[in-house]
Image (cartoon, rainbow, N blue to C red; front, side):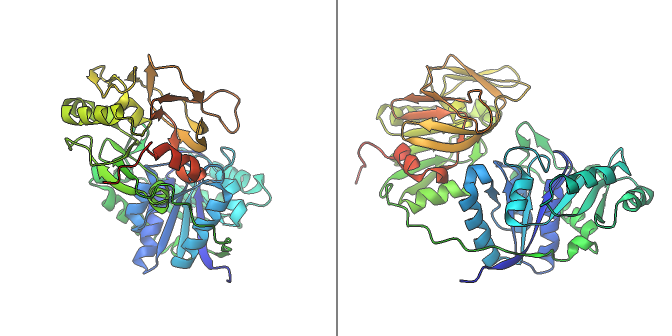
Length: 437
């Protein structure tokens, strides 16, 4: 089969906080207005930016990362998108060359042109020097131009445009407008369902990109279709998995859900905030999220806490990741210092703090096998049992997050990417005996 071709563009920046997500979302909306089908990807592990990108494009925004999702996973996702879309957009993570592998590594691997977004507040001609550095740092990277964000005036635009070399044009500029800032809190952006102005922001910035060079389709890229993978074994056939999903627990990769279903699992979602009983399930997944923002409500839902304990005492599997870990401990102390009792499936207390904890890519060396993932949190757990293992960082010798195992409960701050090891994932959720009733 011939390799599908599709226009593609990589949106990056010299650092975080430049406006990549805003520009990527507005660019998706702009091309959607022009009747084009847009597929968006987000580099690296991220649960919040993809929700904004999904809102803008109308399609699920998937993660792409040469380490976590793997080169083969990236190739498969891009080839599928190229068959479905008129335009592929990829938003980078952090700065263009930050991390190993970096956004630049991903763009180079697939031959995708890069546009760099600069927060121009407080500088003008210096942007040209920075852009030149990004463009020349790696000989195989193609930087086709820049977007100047936070422009103060027409004169500001002209100063930047005049300083740039011809091969690095100013493709668009976005006027300074405090109303266009995407609100955030600890861990990242506020999700679309909690942000009433998001649609207006996307539309306003898309208006500013209309008529610029970015309104035209970028260069087409060939995305070879990888060999068809073998069908996944039905190791979870007949297994009913309950998944916590509400405002407190929402950090879920769509690829994780697809993998569970592809292996035969039946997925049943429930809300620890609002439901008073669990669905009839064989295993539980308590993903990450913001339980600290809803700790009082979680603590007050005594029937749900009792149901969790019944499930645990019955010896059925539970995977608790990050926010899920906080939920299964004995207590959670919120940012105001208020202590809230949690499920108490495992000894320990978690307390919120002002600064971030352990972050970055890590593998979890579980007895079932090693799974890749990442950690990013603003709490610290103490008084916990002795870990069975610690996360393994791909490029740093220091131990990562603790991994706990107590009966069939597996808990850690690490967010796992299930497709990195389907067999180990299936073993995590397989009960000792599946109830066939």
